[in-house]
Each structure stands twice: as C-alpha cells, then as structure tokens.
Image 1 (cartoon, rainbow, N blue to C red):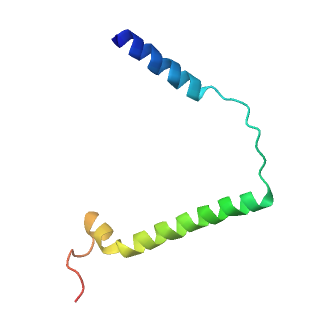
Image 2 (tube, rainbow, N blue to C red):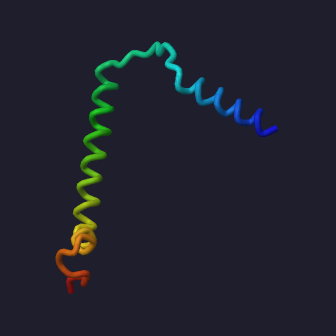
Image 3 (spheres, helix red, strand yellow):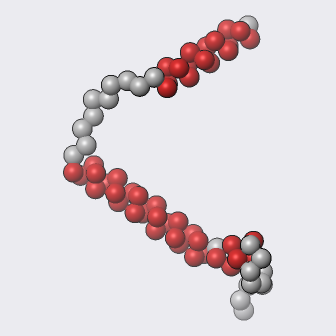
Length: 69
C-alpha cells in the first residue's frame, strides 16, 4: 500500500513539474496590473518595516525595547 502511495506521489510531482504549452496572452492592461501589484507589495513591505522598526532595532541589539511615551 505504501508503495502505491509513493508512486502516485512521484507521478503527481512529475506531472506538475513537466512544462506544458501555455496558450496565454498578456495585453498591456495585464502588464500594468502586475506592475501595480508589485509596487503595492513593495509599499506594504515598506510600511510594515516602518511600523515594526523599533522591534527590528531591538532584535539586532540597537536602541531600547521601551515604547515611546
């Protein structure tokens, strides 16, 4: 039974890895939407770093862990 599960898992992984033809078209709107998502992700990451900056400094040993009053 275990042998069948292993062979099924291997077959599934191979089926997912083997590239297949993608009949896709990216128009300018799709490209700008992808670019907008990337820029939004970078902005969200920058805001997260800004929000947690004191914790990041404390993690690396800089500053104090006390919150400002």
